[in-house]
Image (cartoon, rainbow, N blue to C red):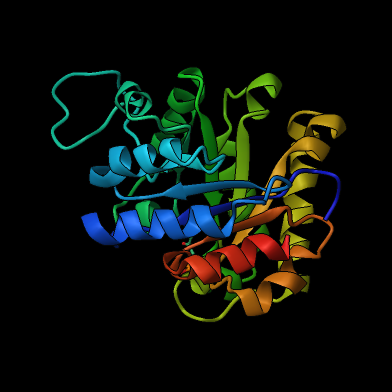
Length: 254
Ligand code: 13P
């Protein structure tokens, strides 16, 4: 890891309920009370955002509140969708865009994801842009072109200044929720290539400052090796973020 401040996000996905989301928040806050050297965010389901925010606020926690998705239009007849203003109103600071489950289960396109990234940044929020190849794409030797395309299109019309509020999450789809993480060498290779692309798209300084985090079956047992790689600046955690001790173990590995 470099002098970039590590970033760890806990993506709770469609898990927890009113009681367990509150318990988990309290557990995370208590476990991370003395952690100031890592940026930490939690991404609860929409219905629990306000309650989680109020626990974070009451406990004076630096843990950021994140949303798992957003819609790019400001308001109107978009049944079921949630705008950036609504998220800000609930105290959200950071939004996940292009998570693999949104791409591959819900069918989001590169263009829609780019619209969400731009709306998020234009609203003054932070954005975690998720990219990653499927198993078929990896086996066909398309890992690099797929990730490069997703980064390029996700960041279309995003300026160097705006990129200050972007974290890129490399999450190989085949590693998500499968218990099979990418090897530290393979993940480092993809991260280094994404950073090289950022140098081309912006410049070396911007590329060196941008955090690129890894996601996919990250747990306390494999976090140390992955997070020790020079271009891996933290993690986006799914399953292990649902247990405060596992999540804080990963944060501490940073
Ligand atoms: P798992 O950690 O459960 O593999 O999920 C990773 C992920 O999708 C985080 O966004």
